[in-house]
Image (cartoon, rainbow, N blue to C red; front, side, top):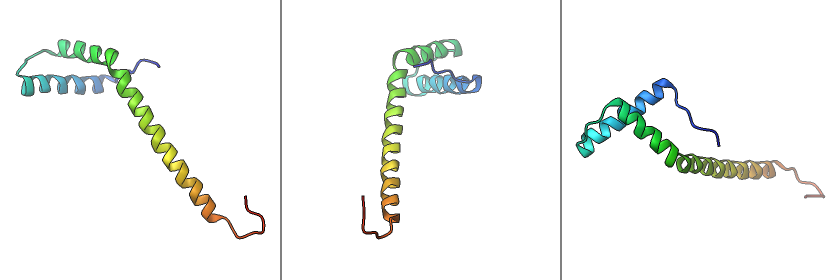
Length: 84
């Protein structure tokens, strides 16, 4: 797996969310640099779990859609003496 990299704008938005969560929900004030370090820590230590879950979910959705396409194709079959 390659490292997940966020654009500057995405990183700023995530850091802002981290700071707001810590301030509003835990009554902890931290600066942007510390929030950035916290983001890096979570990205390195738990990011793969979220990434993999996203892949599993995408695979399940794709499989479901492929099954539906397969069923739609069978529905298009015309009557014939030989059927597969």
